[in-house]
Image 1: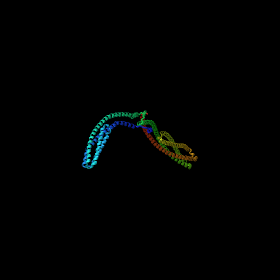
Image 2 (image 1 turned 120 degrees about the vertical axis):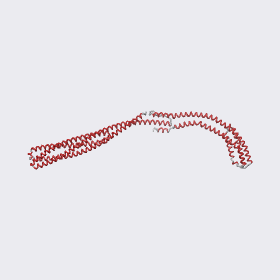
Image 3 (image 1 turned 30 degrees about the vertical axis):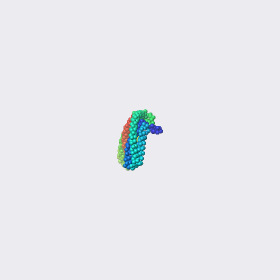
Image 4 (image 1 turned 120 degrees about the horizontal axis):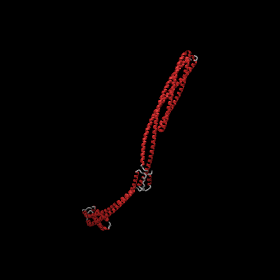
Length: 575
């Protein structure tokens, strides 16, 4: 926009352009150089014309002399042979001679120095007029037939032609003399003209030198000043790159545009320098952020690896829990079978009690069998109590693993938050892992409650079994009193039957819970395996992102070096 101002400003001002100056100076030089040549050409042409006129006069005088010498005889011959003289063209020749003598008279002019020439021309002119009159009279008398009167006129023409020839000879001498005078004048004037031309040429050289000096001052000096300023800019110094010129021509416009260019270049370099500094600063920040992100990715990768290790451990523990639950399931099946046997035995006892005392011996034997069976049941209940204790330990282990998984998920969420957008997907996975850990913990707590209930019931059953053993031992001692207490024994056996049925129901329920827990643990194992696969994929993605960040860091380092080189290059300019 600034560059358009001088153009708009100069539209309203008169501008003596450089082309006009050069044109005028060269025009003056050429005019001064051509003046001597023009004068020489003028004088030379004048002298040549004067000399040509003299030569023309001589040629015309000779034509008149030679024509008048032979013409009267030719006319007589035409008259003698009865030829039409008027058609012979002799009249035109006479008219030509009269025109020639008139031209000679006009060319000689009124110069008193050539009065003889003028008098001689007047004599010849009178003779030619008389000569023409006789010719006309002879033509009128003779025509195309011979006539003595006409012939006499032609003889008179012959006499006049002698006088004309003599006067033409005299005039030729006078014209030759005049031609010599003209030659002398030409020689004298030519010498003067040479001196004048030399003076004018010398003056033209001086004027040309002055114009060249002026041209040098007007054109070369400002151009040298511009050249010096350009050399200063070429040396990368823009502190003093302003040209001050007041000429209203193209050089002034050039100086103005040069100043605008210098200011624009200075502004551009200042802006480029500022942008270069900003780029360098931004590159440093981006590089630092990339390095921090890379470190965060490395930490996330380490945590993911640690989490993978813990998940593998949790998978192993889950597999152990599944194995233990399978064992519990088998033990529950055995207990269920034993309790069914107990039910059958209790039924047999009830049948024996109803048969009466005569079956006492068989009852005693049966009691011995029941004693043995109760011992086995007590042993199985003790084993079940031990197994439930192990299940409780396994559930505690699951709870610990869930707590560690929850802690790892919390750490992963923190690292994903640090990673920003790049860790968004990992944050989702960490949330799913936390949910899975919570579900596992809740399931473990439920299993723990069930196992605690089983432990309490097995403890009760153990006490009852021990009480039964005591009663059986007493039964061996008080066999004699059995008859009296048979009804009470029958009632006790019924109560035992009821409690055994309750135990069978509880063991059946426990078997179902163990089976469901086994299925849940298998589902947990499947989820943990999927989580392990997803975590591995996340680890691979993080490693890939880390490699990309390393490449980006290398690229940013190259850009930073380029920006540094640009800043160093710009620092070489003095603004």
